[in-house]
Length: 338
Image (cartoon, rainbow, N blue to C red; front, side, top):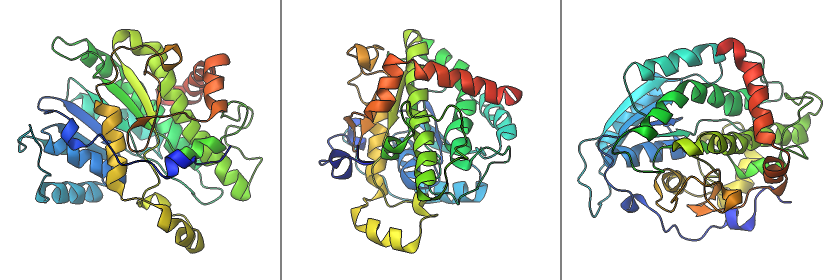
């Protein structure tokens, strides 16, 4: 199985754009890592559609610069929405330090009583070998998987409350996890190395691929398990591969690797379209799971298409209940910070 499929590497022209999204006045959103890359594009689009957007990240300076840039950039014409009523707010969030995440969620909950859509977009790739979080988890595991899981733990009640509100459209309250085609390199058979969660036993290039791949497979598994647990209460949860993009996600890559991959990368705006599709498409008509013929728990491909993730990850979810197993493991690993 290749790490990236042909369909993911060379997607067709997008058919879902900002123009397909209606006015978002009165709705509240969080985009983690919204200061750059496709998170920036998503934040910009929602702001111009009159949404209230929290850009969550470590750097207030980067967020304020992104906010200034968004506000000073002219919005693309929209056939039905007149902008000017959106808002952008910085929310401090350090996924590298689990001890700070509860306070970040509390700050948001102290300001808002609803959360319509959250994109768990922030992440890292290719971190130097041996890198760890403040709590000594392998960096990809901690930042890409454990941190978002913990953040969502604190936000789940307000997501469920929002889905239950009178006037909120069915299937419109969503939890989105930004994964990667790199999940195809996750350990087999399930996508998670259950006996060595930090994958200390494998180093080098192979170890890096396994660590990143595992963290991204976990994003898919978290989305699927949220859909399974909370779909009956009106919550939709999806994972998405935003596409191969020109973003600062490649900051740890060597010069040679950057040189050979650069021609295959697309503008980050296309990744934003993938995120918008996951957050706003109207093709989800009920909360039925994808394995039962619905869309909940599905994997989205660039630039907004229903895709097929790696068979070993999805077979584990369907046949071996690996989403539930991972949820239990995360609860145990993170209990002191919950």
